[in-house]
Amino acid sequence: MYPLLPLLLLLFFLLPNAKCQTCGDTPSYSSGSFNVTLAGGNNRTFQLFTPWTEYECSSFCVGPPQEKRPLVINWHGCNAHVPVVAYQEQISRIEQSASDYGYYAITPVGSKEDLIDQFGWNTVGIQCGKFGEDDFVFAETLLDWAAENLCVDTARIYSTGFSTGAFHSNGLGCRMPNRFAGIAPIAGSFGRLYESECKQGSPVSVLSFHSRGDKTVPYDGNFEWLGQAEVTSLWEKRNGCTNETARVTYESETTICKRKECPGAPVEDCTLTGLDHCWVGGRSGGFESPGSCVAQPGDIDATKHMFETWEREAQHL
Image (cartoon, rainbow, N blue to C red):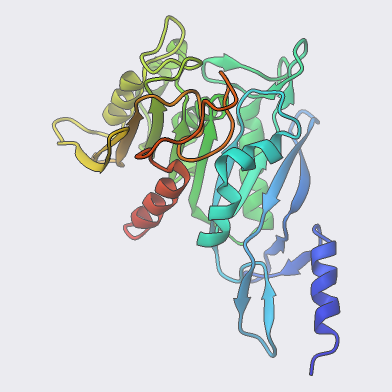
């Protein structure tokens, strides 16, 4: 009945950078790899995942969203697992959940360190990128690009990340809270030198995951980085908590999540027991040994929990 429809769909898949006029006059890109140019002239790369949706038109139509959808930015850790984007998706499955919930997902690529063959971020308390590279400018440029080129709900943009990417998510919540609805750092912290900078400012929803067995970013901190209890306390105070009672949202033999409904924005902290430096919850990978990130019965699935949390919180926006 529609002999050209299969061909048109095939062309759309084969041309990932093609624009479709959606969301009014806002163009929307399909999934693919893109570059943005920072203010200093540096080009930076990121992977875009676009959720495909069915919508009504003169015939059967499928393509990028026609209504504004949330966006999650997924920052990888400091590592040499090339390609870093594929590895980050392997351990996090963010794009899989983004597809299930109808989110855009952006996975930025870190800059390469000058002397070490690994990629990462220069952020609050850890340097794992090219000297002088400003990853806060990169984040801001990505947000501007998304607002201009995607059918994004700018009131529902989230940041998550693993390890160094978790540091960066904390830093973004600290420095750019008005551009994020929430952050979900996994196995990260703050540098102690940046603690005072982040004590005051606009609130932002926080959902943290960290294991007591983490040997790379110690749960209890060290001379350089805050411990997880200190990070949680910092966010609670910034979001206006005083005597609020913590509510348990998840509890098992390996995991406990406690949430406070602070006046400014909620703060939730999920603590695990024996897991290593890992993306929490049934994901592959591991820094100390190949099997050190195998999920144990009772381990929370961080990706599932963060999307469910964001969906619940969105009902109150």
